[in-house]
Length: 248
Image (cartoon, rainbow, N blue to C red; front, top):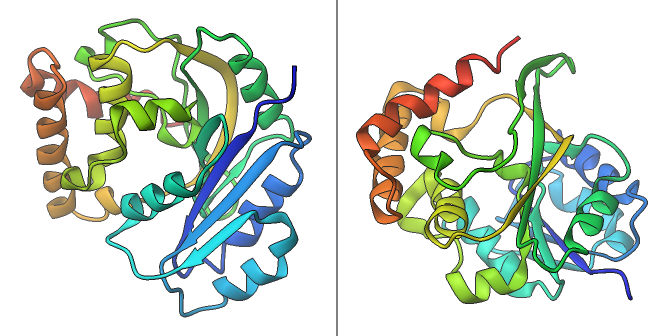
């Protein structure tokens, strides 16, 4: 049986400080059948130069204006031809060199629609400041504020074709809404890869200030209501509480 093709999408904009490390972690993967797609939002720093320097490892690349990160990811998905699709943000990098091999091995089971794993948040000095340990998926656990770390989320391409792409009306919660839609509302089969798959830099758009945090709660609530979460107001409370136990 031929190796599954994995389409990996990296979205960039003025990411010169971190993109090289991100790309190198892809290059160092021991899995060969990777389609690497980079979607750039018209960077004005040295991002494009870094991409050009690594062009031999990049399958597809576009640089054009977009409507934010999830619009750019959707563009990447539309370019993807792989059996499996995943995202590696430009601030993130793979935790070890066999991540893609482990992902492909999990998808050898035809009953697996989605895989996800664990994630470490790291400070600029490389120190781990938060450990996101997902645990096995149980149908209905989204009702208790659970969600997997999106940078570890991989699914079969046919799910995007059947269930839709990232919905921009949910703002910074578009990734949460998509995972709710795929896993909770449509009851797909998810496999937990019990390993730290990705190292992620601390910080994020939804957490920059109180106003952004309030907007994120509103988007979360809309996503929950749309996808049939039981008692969404209670879930809004549970969701951030789960993070408390992840800090070290």
